[in-house]
Image 1 (cartoon, rainbow, N blue to C red):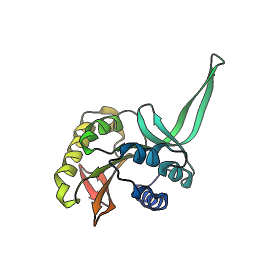
Image 2: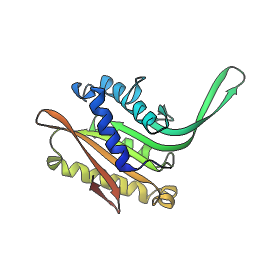
Image 3: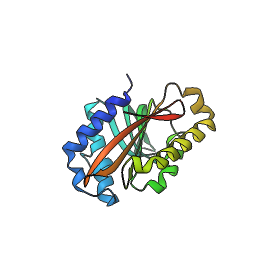
Image 4: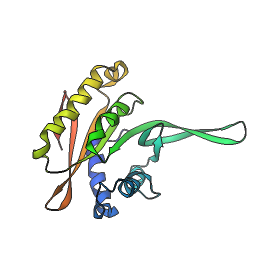
Amino acid sequence: MTVNTQKFYNLFLEEIKKSGIESIPWNDSKEWTDRMLKDKNCVMEKMAKSLGLLYCHDYFYLDGIFYRKKLGYKNLDTEFHFYAQNIEVIIEHENDYRGIETEIYKLIPLFLAPLKVIITYFDGSIDENKNKIERIRDIIKNRIRNDNPFRLHKNKIKILLIIGFYKNRKIDWQGFIYGDKKFKGI
């Protein structure tokens, strides 16, 4: 069973509301990022549990993953290592939109997973930032075109873009699904 993009987005909105994270400005990147991705009961940890999955942050330079089980082993009887099996969701999170290209370049080729999620933030409304959404689309389109393994699996892999922005002095969210070389709002 793979995680549906709509289900992920709805659960994201639900967990964000419950978490109280919206009282912190996202540009306070350390505290926001910790509450989103790294704390013991962070938003992503709670989402993974709700979906019956495990969560790991900072997995091989990826901001976060949801996975089904771990493969563990001892190395030289001193250190325990684990590797995620059956990765369902890969998450890249960028507080500062200007760093989004790096996040996308990591997201597309490193691991195959049925759902890849990009979370970023804009100052201003979605309408005021259409050029940024087009830029993200173009980066993804070019990255997919130049990555042979991804192209082979592209019909099985979904990309979800979640954008946080201020509306009436409160953070609001908009989700977009990438497909057919364009974004469709959800």
